[in-house]
Length: 358
Ligand SMILES: [Zn+2]
Image 1 (cartoon, rainbow, N blue to C red):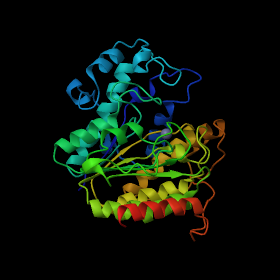
Image 2 (cartoon, protein in one colour):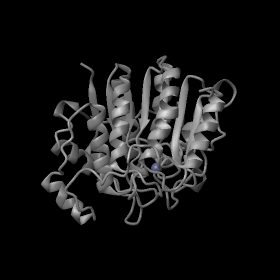
Image 3 (cartoon, rainbow, N blue to C red):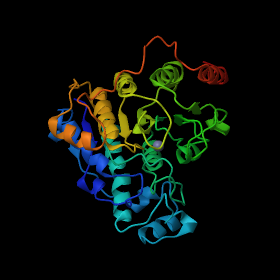
């Protein structure tokens, strides 16, 4: 049987980014509890993260940056100590576990399994700088490691923000396909339609910038028209899915309009691909949405029945957070007839299909 693992640890929610910071690590605890309470995870599937090793981090990061981060002191030359990237006691250990958790997941995946690191997906961290709430780029490190095992990786990023640092890392690399769908005018401002890779990597980097208020149908359109045919053509050994719950309609930092319906569908699509799959959490700044989205995608990828009603204890927390339940599902936001797909998005997809020979 294919090994399944969710990588999680109480240390994932022990970090404190400060009262006014959007990152609320308790979201991970809530997601994990919801998975347990809804029967979407078994005890055998839970794996603890381990600290990433220096030599693993050096696959992507500079020694100078790692030294600076390990000191846990503000240093603006490395982006440390800004409002986005505060430095606090324990940030080094937290970051090592977050990155190491994705490497634990990568081990499961390189043996043919499916694994989800609930503490990973830090796609903005640069080789020598923290950025966008990200300190160590677990994504780039894990992809580089899988690559060195001779595996070809397709990276699908459905976080509302563009994966700038991952794109840069593999921009000239034909063995890593980077595919990002993101809000066109959101942080960090990169991820243009025209960025298709360079040199040998030309044609192996695809960005689909979504207009504000894009909905479930828009995302499904992109996946069916571009992702699936490109995935099939590339025929990778591993799919790496940076999920990102921040494309959800109620996310406080973004302006997309996705519901739980598309996350469920994406989980189904990914599950049906039948290739070893590494998933990471990524963004998501509304705790109840994050928990619902991560429970749903894991349930779908692993082919489980998802109960409609939220458990009593979760519902109590949800109500305090402003979600009145009791369903795990949002009111369906789509008709399924593709009538609503935005014209500007159709043009972008056509442009890419022509450029990529689809
Ligand atoms: Zn994001």
